[in-house]
Length: 394
Image 1: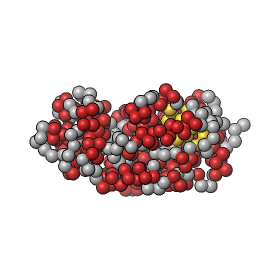
Image 2: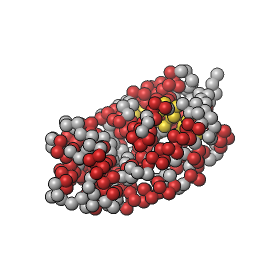
Image 3: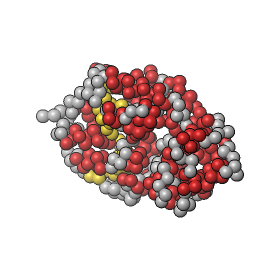
Image 4: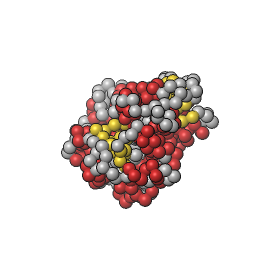
């Protein structure tokens, strides 16, 4: 069993005793809203953890699985009346489960893939560039060349067929704007977030070092990310692992921040669109951890003929898509039901287009909209921008 050293070392072991049992976290928890059982919500799990600390309950396989039935969406942390960092607590508790040999089988498989191939999909470096098939003449000249801007595509956007339009769109945008950019190509490895979600805090520094060393060798100043979890890992977790602030060494930007800058500099020209009504889904990490909510809306509204309408829950109150922190690997049915709830909130808006800024969100919505039999166009922000660019600048 475990001695909960990870929780103690990070100053988190007192959190179950700090909890006021108000229930705010439980009411916003997407997993509790599906299960409607106290032990699946944050308050209930904290109560069990308190009993485990006091020797009144066991940290067993059944409870460990409940720890992984969590999307780490941070909504619970944002409403906590006693300011508990619940997302951090559950991440560290996963590390305790890993140390005790209690990882659910799908989580163990992802951890093994990360250690062997550098990605969570058992695909390996040879499949890292399959997204560029057919546009090699546009992409190959930019692979591992010295440049001021690097595009870090991430595992989902490069290896999942449903979202490979995202890196293709980013290349189009950067070429349209005459950006001096580089790609890591097959040498790019996962940012390490999925490894952390499996509870492995010891192996992730190797991935961090590989990525940052490559960026230094290429003389990069700015790194652009399509995945909110990737940029969050670079900004916060790499600082913990490497002992230095990567954000001080490199400028780290999300897709929306980067495109917003290109717009401000007048480097993107758009075609008039035929009255498109869009609604933007804020990814949990973007809105609640990174605080990036205004830039994507500004980008949407900058495109002539595209108008943004808000869902009832948006910005920092956004609802989770269910496809974060490996929840969809542990319980894909639950993850899909969580996404379906969000899709129904989209369906009551007048929008004909759903836009987001996260490959995982887009994958979740592609599945969920089919489940509820509701048809609406779905695009990542980069795909929308690339689609609306003028073919040739004057």
